Length: 205
Length: 205
DNA sequence: TATTATACATTCATTGGTGTATGTAAAGAG
DNA sequence: CTCTTTACATACACCAATGAATGTATAATA
Image 1: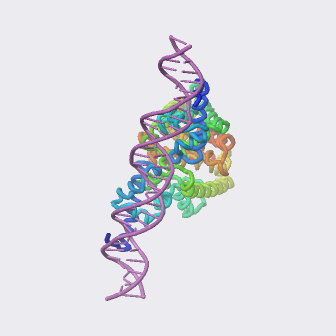
Image 2 (image 1 turned 180 degrees about the vertical axis):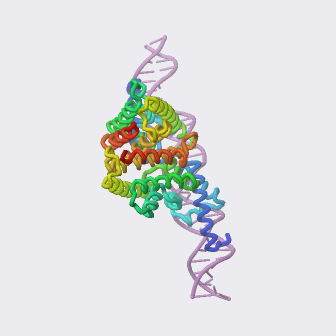
Image 3 (image 1 turned 135 degrees about the vertical axis):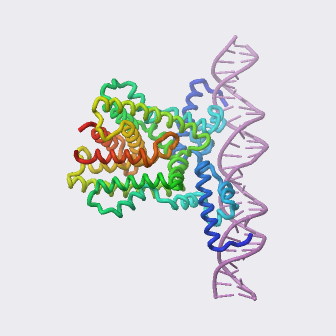
């Protein structure tokens, strides 16, 4: 076998990750063999084992290529003025939903992580990332809702923490629902409309 | 081997299902061998293959022993007067959350189905049940929200369909969040509080 | 230019899991 | 009281998948 240049090696690495996405999506993570992934990528298992230690590491690398929805929200919030906390939160939500609607890779990877992956043993590491990120997002949005409450912008029926939890749950549910694309609802259309109405209902009347 | 009486056979069947729950929860569905389940149940693989054709069938039987949250909601709604549609929907939501909080088996099975199971090939059948059930629930709640709108009880910012989708998404997210019990929020306390505030915000001001 | 490290392909040994076939002792039917 | 069926246990054959070992041609390096 002719040795590849560094660029070409990087290409095959990404080809393997692309193949992993495709096969993981089609057959589920634990039901796919590294042989299948290698075949899909047009290489042998040797190449896979060269670039990745084992399947969990490959899976994690695949996941790392995309930003998770909650990471999108955190990033968006960091770039926000934060003078109007409710508007900022709403924008970060709709932004995350729109990214899901646009980016097919993101949808596919999130779909793998939510519906085609078992969170035990090795895979728990992958879950930790999402959990930690959701945790930070929850804390941050609770802070923003607190500020909104201080500014007398949050409807009194909502506790800041309740609003934060509900927002996160709503986003999670919208994303899950959007992934069941068969006659489900779309991210941009239905999802954003729900977020809009929801944030309207959070405001003082 | 001494042959068991019918009652005893039924006992071992349930012992196998109990063992399946335990091991599926601990190791994930596709990473557990029927040998592990048999050992946990105190029998051999012969007993497992006698009662169940293969792993997917065993898994489906395990899932069939509990009502899924959305099935709880549908059942609760069927027993409701339906003169106050918003109240009825709210009650069915809180009822489902309370059942999740109380019933450990239900939590464990739902946790398996949401976090420890890959939905491909054989397992798609199990998912279909939940999908179909969510579909019916969505249609029914949209109808109830329509009625609420006709009665001028639904805040005008919500379309009946949007309200139905948001309610379902919120429930899905609350259930998922409740399953991540590590410093997450509880079903009864936080979950119900969110549902209460949410349904308050759906009403006309 | 000689040498070394790289980027794989190929081969191999091992194993864990599956499905089936067979054994068997007691339960239940007549 | 037999005869059949039940409810398993045991044994067997058979992959499919893994991980490591080895081979190898070429980039990179000095």
